[in-house]
Image (cartoon, rainbow, N blue to C red; front, side, top):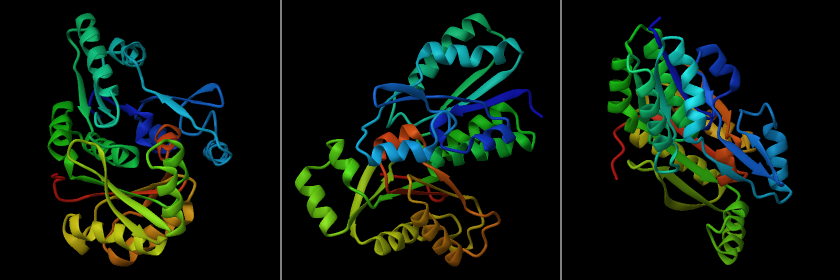
Amino acid sequence: MPNFILTCCSTADMPYEYFQKRKIPFVSFHFNIDGKEYPDDLGRTMSFEEFYHRIEQGAMPTTSQVNVGQFIDFFEPYLKDSKDILHISLSTGLSGVYNSACIAREELLSRYPERKIMIVDSLGASSGYGLLTDLAADMRQRGATIEEVYTWVEENKLKVHHWFFSTDLTHYKRGGRISATSAVVGSLLHICPLLNMDDDGKLIPRSKIRGKKHVINEIVKKMKEHVENGLEYSGKCFISHSACYDDARKVADLIEENFPHLKEPIMINSVGTVIGSHTGIGTVALFFLGDKRVD
C-alpha cells in the first residue's frame, strides 16, 4: 500500500461505512438547523430522515465550510505519522473550501517540509465528487504513487458528469432561487428543473421538464449522450437523492435496463446534510464517467 493518505470532505456524500472500509478520512462541514449547529458527519449525529423531516416542516438550514484551522487540525496527525496527503476538495464553483485547504497546506509545509500535501479541486459535488474520490482510491489500491493519482485525477475530473433534477420546488422558493409565482406555476404544471455541473464546477439549469416520468427519461438520455463507450459502458455509476429514494430507484432501474454491461451495481446514496441544505427535498442526482465537460 502506498505511503499516503487519501482524504476528502463530507460533501462527497458517500456512506460513513464506505469511507471506513476504503480508509478515506473525511473532514466535516457543519450545518445549522433550528438554531443549533451540527457536524455534517454522514447521518451519525442527525439522521438523514430527521434532517429532511425538519426541512419538510419548514426548517431552513444554513451551512459553514471547513476553515483553515480545522484543516490544519485534520491534516497534521497524518503528517506527524510521516504520511503524505492527497486531499480532494468540493468544487470551487460551490464553495471556498479548496482555498482554505490550500492555505492550510502552506502553513503545514512550513512545519513539515519533508512531506507532500497535494490538493485537488474536484469541480464536483455530492456523490459525483464521491465517484472521483472512489476512482482515486481504486488507483491507490492498485499501488499507484501519490503523484500518479494526483495527475490522473487532475486530467480526468471533468469526465465525471453530474446531472440533477428536482421534483419539489418548495425549497427553491424558500431559498429565493425562484419567485413564489414561478413556484406555484411550476408546481401546478409539474415542472422538474434539470441541471448539470459545468466545467467550472457550477450548477447550471439546462431545461424545465414537465412531469417526473419525462425528467427521469431525460436524465438517462443525457447519460446516453455523454457516457464513455455509449451503451457499452461498464464503468461505475452513482446516484444520490434527497429523501426521494423511489425516484432514484426508478432512474437506476432505467439505467440498468439501457446499460447491461455495468460491472457493479449502481450505488444509491443520500444527499448529505450540507448539500441537502441547498437542494431541499426531491432532488435526484446521477453521476458517471463520460466525455470531457465543456461549456
